[in-house]
Length: 112
Length: 115
Image (cartoon, rainbow over all chains, first blue to last red):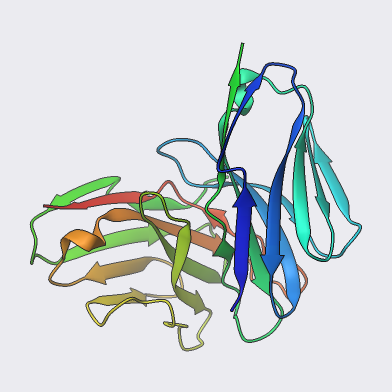
């Protein structure tokens, strides 16, 4: 069974304190790994898609990386506006259609 | 351009009543998905529509749940005889369903509360 596990469940950082969120996955064949950001009361907002081990993508203070078993979302010098829940999801190659299987998310709080 | 829209944004109903939730996908997106997000749980896949193909209903939790997509665009998720455990945020997403990349874009969700 496809599984996605995110850690930590919650993370509190001071402004400017860099850190990483983890997403480990067990799937039969990975088609893509997706990162989303979700603010309270809103739908998930797309951040990145990664397809193969070694791939990296960056957007402002965020950088996502992928290995064969896990993905990291690195946050450099975070600001309070980066506070949100970050969701990781996988899409598998065959038998899963195009559905996404999500982890339970990491709730990030960045304080001044 | 316009994103995915959902209505209503909030719905409060009594146990045993039927509810309908609506989703308007991004124009031109051929694939449409419904997910459910319960408190403390991850997003759970419910159903997937792609063009004129038969929908993938493998995630529907019971036969009280059904969905249709008319004219390849708007979709309605119907929950019959609602139960308290149906309380959740129901999210709709759409995508271009390309073979190489299939980014799903989500709407704001409908928060359903069953009393």
